[in-house]
Length: 164
Image (cartoon, rainbow, N blue to C red; front, side, top):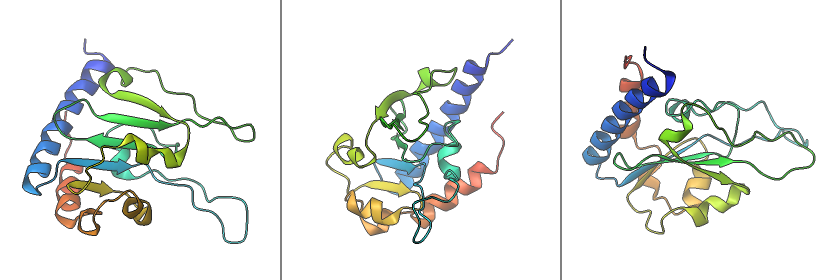
């Protein structure tokens, strides 16, 4: 009988194959996929309910944690920076430990802004997938590599096809 871990590994292998293809087609070295950020309500200290980036949750079963990042190069284990701040006032998700976590390089991210120090310095050939476009520009991602249409079209098409 197949285990969840083996099924996930097969699924991840297919995603890695697709990543290699889309990176090669678009002359990119890696994809940086953002789970998303909390959006503050205007003139309030509350945020709207968080909705994760669909391309992020296609890779990992993390649906309720903002400020997480995936680094995908199609060759190495995907890297997941999991947002896990030290916070007295808010409930914080613990670092996951499940059937899928051994398939990734999992690292805690205590400060949302600390992602800049975690990424490789050369980001000219990195594609950003997410809705925080100003954050991507602040990280040094070129504008033409922020949600590039050809990459999104490829990912959207393949996301509609069942892998198993």
